[in-house]
Length: 538
Ligand code: HEM
Image (cartoon, rainbow, N blue to C red; front, side, top):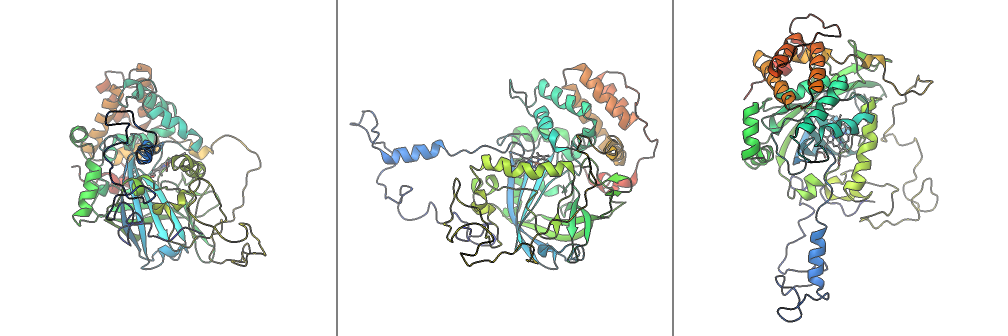
């Protein structure tokens, strides 16, 4: 049983859980003892050494000494906001998720983030942005932990530590912009060419958004909806900002980084405080849940691929409004714990090998980041659905559990006669026939195409946007010390688009290599017109 119910979302739906703390007529210790003096420590005489007896000093200093917790291993810098999600009900034929039924309102907490920078880093760096949403539904908490780019660097989660180690600052100097850090990043993406599509999005204007309010969001992976009859549909999630999609240009981004490193954080908080509540429509692309899980030649389990909207339109299923700033950054934005495995009946995962590793990673990291296994009891993480788990004890346990013993079936304590498989409202893992008969460490052949989607994206851009991509590659690769790495990345670009490769090679003063893989001689694709062509560049 959860501790005393308080609104997990704080301001919009009720008093924040912290309202009782640090208020009142008298200053006290943590034990409620009224204090007469908090400005002077207890000394032997007025000049003498401080006495160990000073219990107030020791409490004050000891607590201060432990104020910091580890920052997130990635996505350390973020900004959050409360809001509400209202469902249109348009997906209720394909999912039984209660919060997606018609006109249901669900409180949400959203955290936007950069990926690589530390907690005190600047906002307008060139990077991917996180876009995580916690829906406090009646059926349990559902987390949609997405990014502002629809594809990811790697296909298999076992490589996540590698890409993060390659992209974070070098261990010797810890300087993010050092040449060594550019070398390791470009070394990785030129050797692991599956990263080329994501890198292209990073080098585009999408890598330097104008505001969190003007970013799209993507679930990236393919998920599975399950309806009341048990029928399944594969889906990809999209957030579309009502504010439009806008970016900075590189010179603006650099100047802002110096002049106002909190630019995005301030922009979000100011807009909400002014009553200009940002809104996003949630939509899904839907695909038949076929045996091969392919759609128009695209493997839906490959997270380095997206499905162009011309092939599968995004269908709106609800709208989210962010309408309140956090009361306390640490309590809410820092302690919030998202996890792609926080699911509700009607939404399930797929066998995407990146998603499968994420299902392990988030709970694991949060046990160390938030100091033990009971972080679901922290106010921002408390579900709004009733909780009756069998978890006991552990660090920072706040509940006083009663009952005979936490095991089921249980004939002694009377409450909740749990019968496996009898609860129609319960989450049911989608039954799936598995074909594999051998275990092996390899990807399906359908994951092998590493260049066509980077090409599709590049060719969908307007001339100005293409120019920005060329400038970004030239600038970033120009920071790369090792010539062999620059050459290897040019070889990858040759497989994407000859014009792009030649322009970047010219900027770097290197010869443009020939493509080694067959490049389709197609016209600029209209397939991404909604992504590349129509959004204004600030
Ligand atoms: C945060 C791991 C892929 C989006 C994190 C964190 C870890 C992690 C350990 C820190 C969580 C915390 O301390 O609370 C991984 C692994 C991945 C992976 C192992 C690949 C196997 C992805 C992908 C996306 C993504 C594909 C986007 C679709 C995010 C976001 C956050 C995050 C948005 C920040 C959540 C927040 O605001 O608190 N990830 N990640 N990650 N990840 Fe991933």
